[in-house]
Length: 376
Image (cartoon, rainbow, N blue to C red; front, side, top):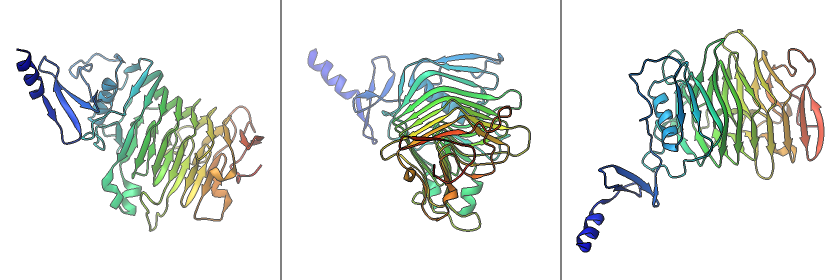
């Protein structure tokens, strides 16, 4: 009897082509494993599509449920009016099945240009200090053979949340999350580890530690691009590599270049003049090999590029040396700055002119009220 049981258990193990295994838990439920650990798979069982109750509240407690949220958003569920809370803890994405990596459903992507379409998160997400660990996302591979038009007109926005979009007076919210040891390599022109593209959104208390974020344009440590009356406040980026890198996609032509790399946001701008964009009370710390670099233009400790109705104030940038924020293919130092690499942003609040930003280079501190070159 014991021998028969062993044989039957052996027959219940199926080896997958992605170096993972699938086993039966004894209740006819098949579970994917990677390296002997149950792999992260999207779980949407907590969501009832037929429930029309407004302003619902959900609490997610597992990495699988969080993965399921991304799949639902990418499938067209906006969660407008709803509140989603994440239980505090660590959500490990290092054990995602290899067959899922690179798929659109693995973490977030969204449609940036046609913002009337679906695939944008419009609710309120409270992370409660939870840690998202080990995200490894390379997406989308097809754009590596792309053109200038694809770079500038692509509707892809890549990040843990691809697109976060509210409406004036009722912003979407993503707050209180930690991203640790994550890698995001995107060939879209809108890339951020937490949010790819944010519009009428409030992004706050995001911590990014020991991560690597790479794309051709619009690359941010927290948000790739922020538009309209949005806010990014109280976020922290530590020891993270942020690069608009020609080795990923080297675009040439009328809209040339690899540019807009920022410690907090790659590019902050607007479609209308509906309201100010605020980027304040954030901290960026670069030590060792961590850098913010752009091949062609606009690298900034806080923002790569920001338009005239963007207010950048009360932020702190700490670096070991000026070489950690750089533009490699132009001699103009004004395209690389401790605060904002390009544009015409304001560097004060609406109530306190000249509030500025604190810059610390090699232990020496100064207050910077304009974009300026990287000097004290």
